[in-house]
Length: 103
Image 1: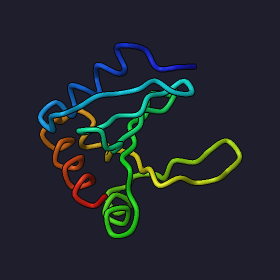
Image 2 (image 1 turned 45 degrees about the horizontal axis):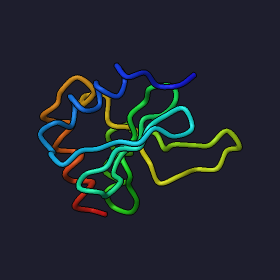
Image 3 (image 1 turned 120 degrees about the horizontal axis):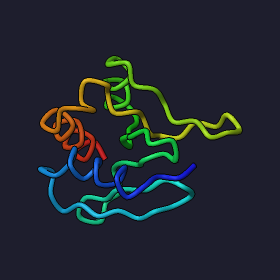
Image 4 (image 1 turned 180 degrees about the vertical axis):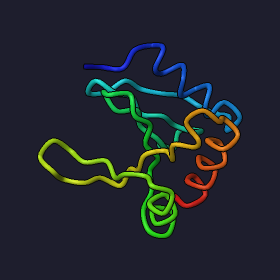
């Protein structure tokens, strides 16, 4: 499975107010950048993940976010966007800005 143009457009709609967005398709998914800095990925299954470690990852985990894991079980420093933000661009942008500040 791979992401569609519609999936990518949905991510742009969520993070539109962050500004400076671009993306690159890769391995069935896509990576998203803000002014050249990667901050999010869209998995091949269509799940949105924010780059996070340390205290920011802890905040995401406290909101029920799940850590991205490879098929071989290895984890990466990406966590799902909290469910409440999936249909709320204002909240999604807040999480994205907090993630960018933590990078």
